[in-house]
Length: 190
Image (cartoon, rainbow, N blue to C red; front, side):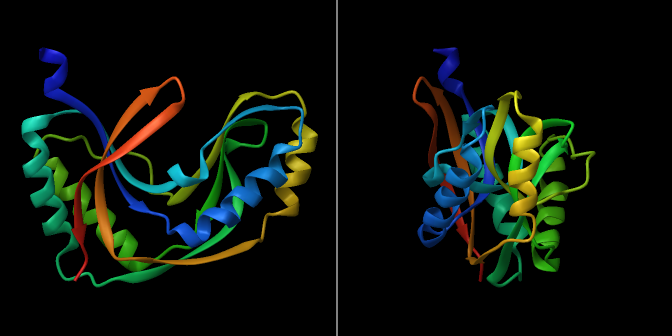
């Protein structure tokens, strides 16, 4: 019974369906190397604002209140989706991502969330916020130069933009088929 008291959760911005095709094409273009990369299903790609880990189910309403407070007077806004990159470095690639152009409203939203969640006991992130969409995770690197060459080819790509009009608290379940995400709460921006 105790295992049902917790859910693995994160707060994110959903990527619109119109961008899914472009993200899939980007993955396909990067896929043709001899490296073992676990690609994120395009329909699962999202902009993580905060990974919460395992949370008690009875905290969900408190987190929803923090989401509402964080949104405050921040109206919907556009994000530009540009360039391809790697965390942490090309010599030790772990994550392949698409970058999000810095946006003051996104930064405000993030900072508001960090402050609010800290009041519930969530630890503030020590690393600077680097908004991105994860395309894949490198499991085994056999052809570093091939990967680097493909990444450089798409370094300055502009995939488009998306409207941010809500924040979502997702439940994440790890299954044999990959991660499954379920919306627990959605808070609209004014």
